[in-house]
Amino acid sequence: MSHHALFVCTSCAFSATQRDHLGHRGGYHLFQQLQQQGQLSPEFTLEAVECLSACHRFCAIALAAPEKTTLMFGDLPPLESAAAIAQLAIQYAASSNGLVPRQSRPEPLQKGILARIPPWPRP
Picture (cartoon, rainbow, N blue to C red):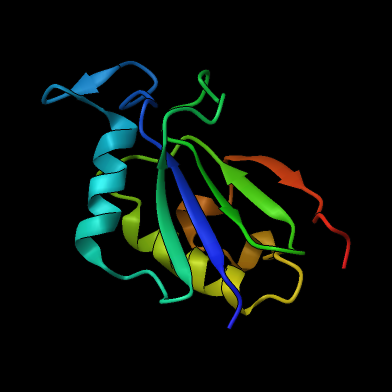
């Protein structure tokens, strides 16, 4: 079983118009939702990161694994996206190259892709 990471930017705004909610940023809330749900596959490590430099988009995440394409998404509603992210993580882990076709992804992740970073080292 290979190792995968799900990075969640904890400094992302709560929404396009709201920076904080209940005293915390949206990314913090999204990270908490993912932690509490416990739906991530065992091959994933959930990592809080201070910034993914997607500040013009709220709630950014990235999925990464050795020799797989890294996928980065933004515009994810922090209180409603955890289940969809967990489902995408399952699809990502099952993919040999990290690519999950847009139409196969859970609906909230069919748009909002910010980056597809080629694998390194190359397989």
